[in-house]
Amino acid sequence: MKVTAIIPDDIVKDVQGFTQGRNITDSLIKALNDWLYSKRIEKLNQELNREPVKFIKGFTADEVRKLSNRT
Image (cartoon, rainbow, N blue to C red; front, side, top):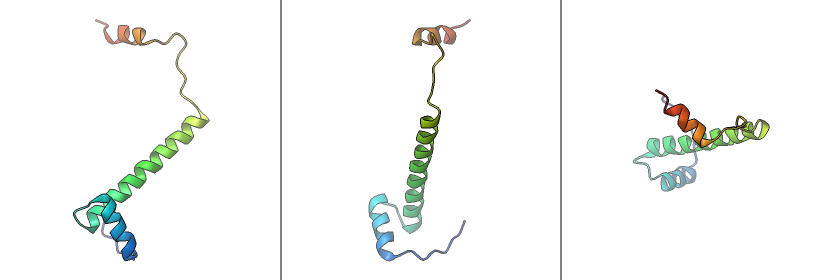
């Protein structure tokens, strides 16, 4: 997608410095991907706080290995 945005030069230079992108576009893509990754982790953490992972009673690594080795 082609986008026109007015972004202050100091912010663009900072982003380029941190991301080490080949150009402004590459730097912005890297920065946005990092931001999205962070937000997805944050969302996952909130979901796990609301509903933590629970293991089935009697669940052990040995039982999983036995399931994996079925013939």
